[in-house]
Structure formats: C-alpha cells, structure tokens
Image (cartoon, rainbow, N blue to C red):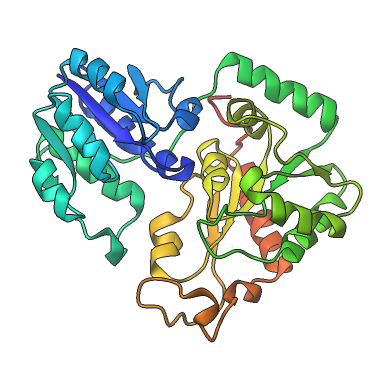
Amino acid sequence: MKVLIARCDRLGDLVLSLPALAWLRRVRPDWEIHALVAPGSVPLVEHDPAVDAFYTWDGLEWDPLRERLAAERYDAGVLLQYQTPLAKLLRASGIKRRYGPLSKLSSWMLLNRGSIQRRSSVDRHECDYNVDLVRRLTGRGVDAPVAHPVLHVGEVQREIGRRFRQDEAPGAEVVAFVHPGSGGSALDWSPAGYAAVANRLAQRPGWRVFITGSHLDRLTVDALAPHLDPVVNVIAERFPLRDFLGVLAAGDVMVAPSTGPIHLAAALNLVAVGLFPPAPTMSPRRWGPLGPWATALLPPVDCPARKHCVMDDCLLYNCLDGIVPARVIEEVDAQIQRRRHAGAATDPAF
C-alpha cells in the first residue's frame, strides 16, 4: 500500500507530526510512506527513516504537482492539518481514500474518510491528534506506543555542528541557545527576560550562550541586543534551516517560547525549556515541546480565556511577565541534572 501524509504549515507543526509518520512505519513496515511538506520544511523529513519519498507544496501553484502525485497512484492520503486547496489537490490527483480532520464545511465534501476531532477543545496534544488520523488507515484495532518526535540529521549537518562547537564554543561544557521570538505564533515573554536568562547562563564557567532567531524575530532580537553581556553571541539569521539543525544538534540547551525551534530542540534531545501562555489554544497541553528533557513553563495566573488569548484586551496582559528569569534558570538546571543522571549526551541521531 502506498500512502501520502501531508503537513504543509509551520515547522513546529511538522515536528509534532513526525510521531504519526514513525507510528505508521512501525505498525506497517511493508507500506510505502510519502510525505508532502512546505518547501522550507524539507530538512525535517529528508533523512527520516519513516519517509520513503517526499514532495513539496507552496500553497499556490499545484498543476505540475498534481500530475506528479497522480503518477504515484496513491492508495490513500492523509491531511494532518486541513486546508481546502490541499484537499482539492489530493482529490484531483486521483487519491480515492482521503483522510483528515473534519474542521470546515468543505472538509465534509472533500474528505471521504474524515474524522471529527474538535482540536479547539484542547483535550489532547497535537501529536495525539495527528497519530489518531493515521491510525484510521490501519484500522481501529491496530495500536502501538507513540514516541516523542525525533529529528534525523545527515553527515554534512553533523560536521557543521561539530565545526560550530569547535570554532565558536571551544572547550565549552554546555552550549545553550536562547530564541526570544515566536514569529507571531503565540504571546511572547519580554526581550529583557530572555536577555537576563542569557546573561546569567553566560556568566557560568564552561557555558557558552547564543541568541538565535529568524527574519520574523528581527525586531525582538534587535530589542534584546542592547541588554546582552558581550560574551553572549547573536547568531540570528546566520544559518539556513538545514545548517541550523546541525548547529542545534551540537548544543545542549534551548530556551524559547512556543515556536518551531523549541520543538526542533526537543526532537534533537536537547534540554528544551519553553515559555507558554495559559490560554487553551496556545497552552502546552496542546503545543508543549515533547522530548526526554523538554518542559514548559506557564505564568502563575488563573487564565480567564475560554479558548483564545485576547492579548491586550485581557486584564492580565501580559501574563507571561509573571515568569521570572530565576524560574527559567531553575528549570534549565533541573532538566540538565535529569539528562546527566540518565547518562545522555547529544542526540543519538547526531
């Protein structure tokens, strides 16, 4: 059987979809599994042993892609996140069995194996929702443990990571990354808070600290920079994603908000401490990082939101200011100790 699994949105969403691919590979090793991802997300699947082949979709032109998918003659397709144009693409490609969440009116017409999930109720983690969708492919009676996300990097990326650590953190016992922006995906902690964490960690003997960020975080990184100790290095926008995965895999710690890099770090077995708002649709209950040394911090407030954060219309805004730098550092230390006691080094894939 040949199946196409599609997840074409943001990096963190794809990371939380990797367990669905791994689960399907584990229970049906005889199937041919292809992935459809956003062009910028290719480094997340190109070395994944659960993926036999992959295609990319940019959300715009799809006539050439339709022809290529049609030529594959898929037995089934699964949308892990529903998008109407993407569902139309699968149908136009001749995929007879189309699975996915029944979340919009058009999904009832375009998905003939859809599932009602009500993800906005936030009763489960995003990873679990994704696994449930692929589980339908194999039948309700088939089950297996669900692992946390694991990212696999290639030899070229490993060498980039080794060279980065050797050249820019020579002799360091701990390499830490602080990623201060969410790219607009969630409520953010203050730049001053991230700067305080970076400075305090950088003062420790044997620690090297780096500020990371994409072009979407430029304003946040610019606001942070004046508050940084000179020993903290800013490497924001320096590496393309493929190289950044190698650099990240060579590190030990990531502190970040609810954004793709915190999920990348957790999936590479780093200590990953995420700062999350308590509003249900942004909370770690659905979006928290998953990994052996991953954890999420919430502000000590009783959030009034029923579903969505109303941002500055809320009397508690910005509630993330209730998280103090000392609490973040305390959690970093706790997870590092757990990691050391377990005898963990860097990610096995690295």
